[in-house]
Amino acid sequence: MVELFERIAQRIGDGGELVALTGAGISAESGIPTFRGDDGFWTRGSTNYRPEELATWRTFASDPELVWPWYLWRLARCRDAQPNPGHTALVDMDEALGNRFTLVTQNVDGLHSRAGSPEHRSYHIHGNLERMRCSAECNANTWPVPDALRVFAKGDAITPADEPLLRCPSCDAWARPHVLWFDECYDEKWFRYRSSMSAAMAADVLLVVGTSGSTNLPMQMASQALRSKALIVEINLRESAFSDYAVQSGGGLVTGPAGTLLPKLARRLASGSSA
Ligand SMILES: [Zn+2]
Image (tube, rainbow, N blue to C red; front, top):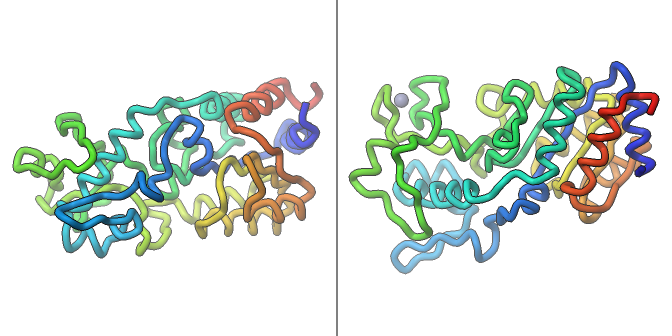
């Protein structure tokens, strides 16, 4: 047994709270590309667009028919992927710990939900490709991408048949992907910002899985967890921006794939504090 996993089990004991924070690494083990680099390019006419250009409110507001096909193609790629043993192990931890477990994920691919992580204990801090919402914010709901919408391949354009399915059913404005764009801010209403920070504050253990620490809220959560004396343990293929926080907290980095390490930790937690 990994020594740090033993320390996690001791901290969780009979009453401790565990927050798992996941990033692209766990999805990569299911074959989901990062959509940065060449794989993320979107070509229209003679122009190549980078994800950082397409994934903004500014671009969507001026050209929704450029942005939507890229997201629908990404969604199709994600739906082709399957949850892996790392996702399943997090469901096992949820079942073992109940309301002492919280999942905070940066991933928008829906794999945690498909593995069975319950929505009421899952904070999707960058949104969810499976859902859309009104771009005019006429209401505070998200809804599933309609089943009637066809599967998009790379380079597909929106047709007149697609468009009604991409409109808000209440006000007929364009619906938008329910994701956090590069020029938008975290908030509670759509992305559970305060809830995630509260979970980090209450955590006895913060488990950081497959994330590099290149986004803001996860780093704030690690900083908060350190201040409130949580044990921080990182599962990652290599050191990241979280590694220093983990060491300072008395924890550290466990190097390896989530799909191998998380099932070991889940089994240890399921056996209780005295195993
Ligand atoms: Zn609307």
